[in-house]
Amino acid sequence: MHKEPLDMLQQLSDFYRDNSELYSSFDINSYEQLTASEMAQFVLSVPQKLDVVLEDKSLEITPLGSFEIWSENLFRIEKDVVRTDRNHSFYPSIETSDPSEMISKCPKMGLLRDILMTFTSSFPNNEPGFVQGMADLCSPLLIHIEDESEAFWCFAGLMNKKKENFNNDGAGIKRQLELLRKLLKVMDLPLYTKLNEIGSMNLFCAFRWILVLFKREFPFEQTMKLWDTCFSNYYSTDFHIFICLTIFETHRNEIIGHIEDTDELLCFIHGLSNKMDSDAILASAEDLFLQFKKICKAQGCLQEGRLDLEKVLGSF
Image (cartoon, rainbow, N blue to C red):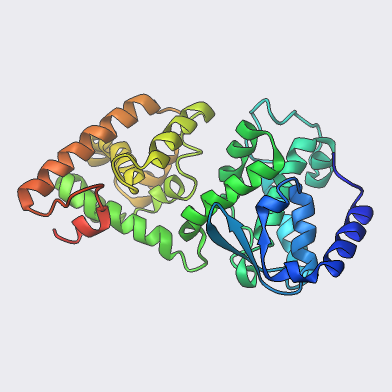
């Protein structure tokens, strides 16, 4: 149960004033019962950068610089939260068009908002702040874990792995799209050539796949199966790139035979949403991965251990 905001703020303020030595190092193991809302107040109340210890890894947290930034993040988060997983039974249907009112009537939406506010308030220099897509990654964790504080720290861990997806300069997504381009060229030159001919080599149509890890391409439970496979890193830390390749390969005949420009390709790819079978996609992705390994072996560029896709593709 949440404390009243003013009481909570006063209690935290008193605590941190009396324990200022904690400002320089904050061990989550000592305060694991804090809710995300309380963590948000903690971040807001501390005047300097914190070093949060999370599973023996350091996660930097910087308090919000201004109320204006806080308000902007809150506005964007609430707008996105009410549109996330709206068909999932975890979030009851609320008949109102106002995001704040909807969240006030649905405590579970409030939990999702609090987790996202806490996390985006914690970015160094408040960058990048809240970015559309973060709610898509956070919501499944909250749905499965149901505990606010545990879901927050799982989300923090996931974002630590996927933070490049949300860089303001887009460098992380560009890097992964470049891997996909190179992989397409190795695995299917005719399809690569077709995409180049229609001016689609930026592969913008795959941007959403990578940003939210196929969250909007498959039904919820099928997406969780894809995540489970990708997060296992069994074959490669970039196995999701082979899933992207598989989606293209599954529909290569339509693309090569009927798509004439980038707009058509984008419309076609987005039209596949929730019409694909994750089991078939995963099986084909595994087959393509093993085929790629054989090609690498023949080229003499296959290293020992888990495949480093970026390093191997640099050899072609």
